[in-house]
Image: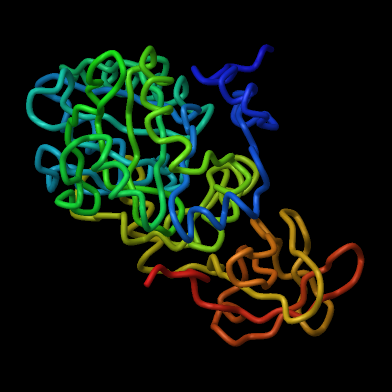
Length: 370
């Protein structure tokens, strides 16, 4: 099956990007080097093409009910122009995906927009439409993935740069808020949804841009913002302790509920969503395992799939994400461990290329912006 291409695929190729398959898309993994791109985001500003992320629009009289039934957070708490992080669970409380839900600003064509992870757009569109039809809800659900390009402008200088291109001060945007902004371009302004959200642990914004205007907007930020690929996005999000769908949880290969995954804060049990009863029981009973972070205290790099063992050489878990942290200069990783081993300071070992490397459990995130 041919890979889907973001609107700027050839623009990135001309800039010398290296590509990788991710979620069925052909995406830039790095332009210069992962380390240089990572450093640019931590110290100045980097821009990522994340057009592989899906966008689903929901509107109509029962839009709020539909969104509330299929996401775990409380959508009724959102005013127009606000967003929230949430989980999508099945009837067993297992995470199918995590997402950001936007209640769109007044005057938008739809009431809500949510962003499933790469490759999940068709699945989530079907889930929403099936539930709507089964429960006779009056709502329109549109897969708008190829209507929008999505860019993430991140770093200490990101808001200043975005404000310069927008010709208005975007620092008044609060965290998890969004508004329509006209961005300057050589052929006139481009109406863009700008949200103060991100996946790097730094301040910044994410931009939903009309697909046809992707290059116009991208070029307004480059070269003042360093073009960054998915490699740096991964090292940045690991330092920030953020989950990656399909890797830190997967409904088939690594089924987890939000309490195990450390995102119980997105579960609002006073709402009626699919999986609510199972999650109420899970909260009452507690979890046998918890998502934890760790740092290796010996030379080596933890990678996805490596075993984690206790001091008696018994396998107690598996690395779900790991890297050599460019910011900290230390090997760090994340995974699920029995609660007896999950407290900070606990010593475990990670099997790196057949050799056990001592590691110590650490609180997440590894890196936190000052």
